[in-house]
Amino acid sequence: MSHLFALLIPTLVTLSSIVLGESAQLSPLAPQPDWSTLQRYTGTITAADFEQLLQQVYVPDGSWRQWISLTPSQALITPYPASAPISLELAPAGSSLKIPTRFWKAREERSPQPGKPLAGLRIAIDPGHLGGAFAQMEARWFRIGNSRPVEEGEMTLMVAKLLQQRLERMGAQVWLTRIKNGATTSLRPGNLKNAAIGSLQEEGARLPITAERLQHEEERLFYRVGEIRNRASLVNTKIKPDLVLCLHFNAEEWGNPNHPSLTEVNHLHLILCGALSEQELRHEDERYTMLVKLLDGTHREELGASETVSRSLASATGLPPFVYHGQKAIPASGNPYLWLRNLLANRIFECPVVYCEPYVMNSRAVFNRVQQGDYSGRRNINGVSLPSIYREYADAVAQGLADYYGGGTQ
Ligand SMILES: [Zn+2]
Image (cartoon, rainbow, N blue to C red; front, side, top):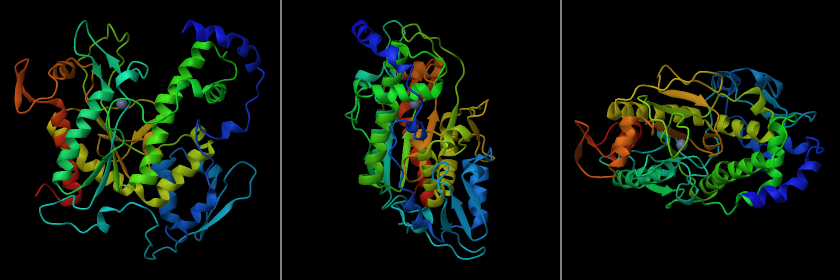
């Protein structure tokens, strides 16, 4: 770390003079959108449905009006500041809607098979985070003394592999976005200096860009942004699934990973794409991908599948719903487990996403279960008979999908 610091000092002097430029119109590492592709949605949505999705799901603060204006027959969409708007023809009110051209199929487009509730369904499982050599860099690792480390990236991969077997037994075709711990992207923090400078400048021109902040941002752009973008590219161009399952374990602040604080708090929630802020919407790529999600009709599927998965997870785990305070998330429906929140990993997968956040890893109860590893059957853990936490998670998600697509396990 010290050699990096020494190398960076001379360059820092010149950085402060760089003015925030065009690059800030895109979020970090985002490709330039091709707005002409939105024409494939011609006549696929009415003005009323468009406005309802913008106002109630995707941009509830109303700032979409700075970029989009709706008449009964067309949407005028401004691709970037001061550009002429592009026009999208809307479906007349009350008309029967055309399904947009998209690679995934909604539940109602499938033909169920008896005994195989997921027959023909294409599912990509995204085991959250990288794990392995990067677990500490991505701050998804802690241990107590000589305990088994609690490592989210490894835990999500274990659930993913168990879940794959269960979904395949019900007829689904399943892909994992990673099959081992580590990175799928070939990017590394050392390649990302310019992007990191750009993103730090956008955060606040008055804060000095120290070597420590720069390194931290280069690493974040690697393990969070570059890695997720690579997985999304795999999903959107190769796997082309009907659904992505993003698997995570939640946590409360644990402080020092070698002396973490444990908590009695434990909870569950699922995240649906939505609730973009005015500031996020200033990124051209975020506006574009939000519109693709909206016009593809993903919200209805995300809501339906997340409803049944939240019910089966809540029933299997007994966990109470997590409650967000602040602006970044809002309730998605009357179901207290479902929240709308704009994450890279639920926005850039171009299909419905069920994004699971069960269990607080540094709760005493979950920590004790993680120490047991994976096992079949049940074990007595502090006086309670429990299945492996990984199997409980995988069984519940599989059940929730069977309930959604097949009306229950058959
Ligand atoms: Zn996570």
